[in-house]
Amino acid sequence: MSVDTAARPETRTERASGPSAASKRKGTLRQRIWRERWTYTFIVPGALFFLVFAYVPMLGNIVAFQQYSPFRGFTGSPFVGFANFTVLLEDPAVLQALENTLVIAVLQLVFAFPAPIALALLLNSLLSERIKRLVQTVVYLPYFLSWVIVISVWQQVLGGGGLVAGLLDGWGVSGFDAMTNADTFKLLVVAQNIWKDCGWGTIIFFAAIAGIPNDRYEAAAIDGASGWQRTWHITLPALVPVATLLLILNIGSILTVGFEQLLLQQPMVGAEAAEVLDTFVYFRGVLGGQWGVATAAGLLKGVIGTILVLSANKIAKRLGGEGIY
Image (tube, rainbow, N blue to C red; front, side, top):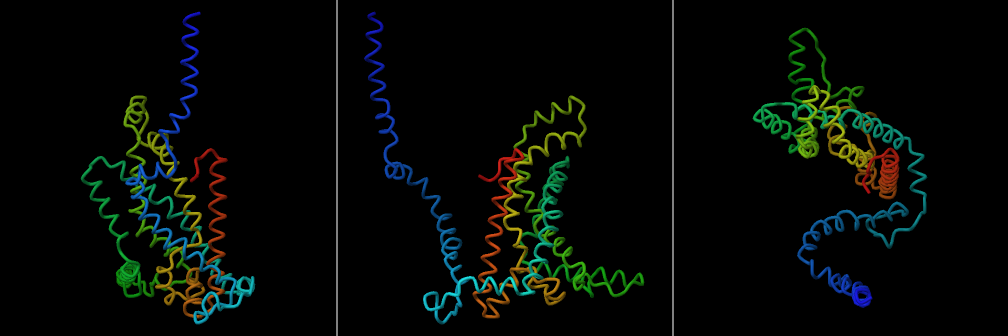
């Protein structure tokens, strides 16, 4: 009895003082922010970047519902409702730009997206660290080149007066010019993206491969698994979460297929082959002065991208993946 009576007051005291002590340690939201103020300081640059360059410009989407004039401004331009969207959907040039955008986007998902994964697996299979670092350095370099330089290099190689055309002329084959061929232009765009961005994209997959414990490979090797079997059953499953995340993000930007790259090459192949939604917005809005129609096209592209991200994330979760949130 003495033990029970001694224990009861102590338990009641702990229960009574427990929540208050915990709340005292946590404090109010303002107190916690002040206590961790130096940690929150690191968030400020990133938050300001998205605020200034992402969220504030979104207010300009009001132009899609106006007959906008730069001289009148947002407040002086009259509202026209969904008239700009009606003009947009009835314009045959929009359908051509949308078709080109979707074709290039699908080709990039099929060929350009898996390219960094394949390159990372290939480099990971190299035994020599010196050769691996050399190859990594070489494939990283094109990423830091501007599209002006990239297209100039490709013109010197695959253009009408380029290296390949000169070799074919020596063999009796004339008239080769891959840079002005409208039929193969979309494949050329995808090949340029792979050449420029593939090496940089392997960094993320290399980080995922580096996080795989070596004892898994050692255990598989002891069990008699070949190099291909270790890659298929150990490396690839470890890359699936990262690949799923990047795939969802790429699907969200599927309608953004490279403005500068296509704008620079459009004079060589024509608008029928190289006109996409981004160049359509540029020519109609910046050069043509149809600000409302151009903004409506950009807003429609953003809405479609958002729907695709949400749908892809939901599908990934239903298939057992983690998704992006």
